[in-house]
Length: 101
Image (cartoon, rainbow, N blue to C red):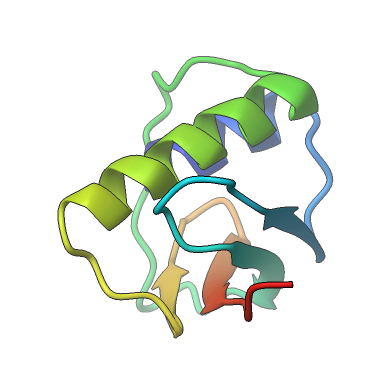
């Protein structure tokens, strides 16, 4: 997830927003929110400077694929992860399971 976020950021993707992924199969419908946080230079570490660069459309496609793989592997959602980076752009990712419509 962290490498995906870094690649998207390097490609100009906009954060502080959400993406919704609705599936017609057995994968859960999910909403992903990515929020920029204020960094703390004493607790941060460098993000992968060699991460690829990807645009927002590719980011959304890769994020959907990652969520499907995570669901198949039994990763739980309805939680948040924080990724701290020394470049001052820390990110929090919240993934929420949505009710079927």
